[in-house]
Image (tube, rainbow, N blue to C red; front, side, top):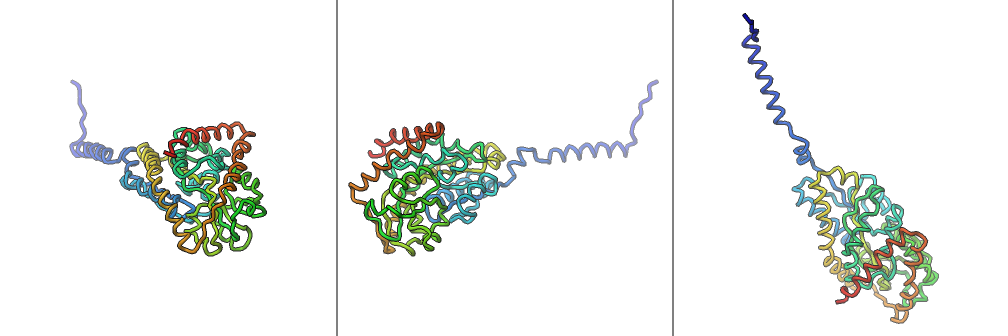
Length: 352
């Protein structure tokens, strides 16, 4: 006769209870997907300006991401170079102390030289034209792909405003540029352009410009009217020469490692909201430019236009800068062709 051994009743109950408890705990523990849903991600957004297009886009983008992520991404916004000068903001975005920065692309030239092609003088004729170029699919594909091997994930490209020149003494004629030491953006396209006009170009981050201006280290600066107004350049000069060249574009770059750590649905939100806000900022940028020009005049500033024949002569002098600077580097040449082709495609529609 087969003997069947059984556990004592108390031990049986205890064993069954342990199994039930283990099952209950296993079911109660969140899965990997559920844990990802519960985690909150901080997105620090940095910009060099205040009350202007870069920081306004950053604020709009951060607000949209917080809303669409249901608060799973928390945006912290730092305008006016609070997280350091532009080079430090770029390094922070590359290495992860900053999750997103909104900066003119030519300042990323140390990451990839092709970032500077948008700074070519004469590339666009107006705000409307620049916005068309920034929205061109080929331009978007090029600009957002740059820096992917250097810790960056591009999410948006847009136009901020044209460049103009503030100076301690008025620049009323083309000849008045000669001998001036002007702050420029960090781009060969800009340095070559200004050198041709007899200027000594000094590449400088926006946050360093006003002190250098006040101390006499430079005679003036190339930037948009927005920064001249909102950073109180009127305290050191009232003269702005409205040359409207080159265009100031912006790129929004996200730290790639941080982006790759996000669940797929949050990655999609980042990309989608950046693209949508790069469209929404167009009318805002146009309005901000008009308000900045009016504010400059209201503060006692002067807006100077070169005589039409001298403006045309300047553009003729600068027209070959892009091709000349890019011709020695095949990759830079190819990138320059992409943006100039886009400019040609969109020039007619921008004027309509």
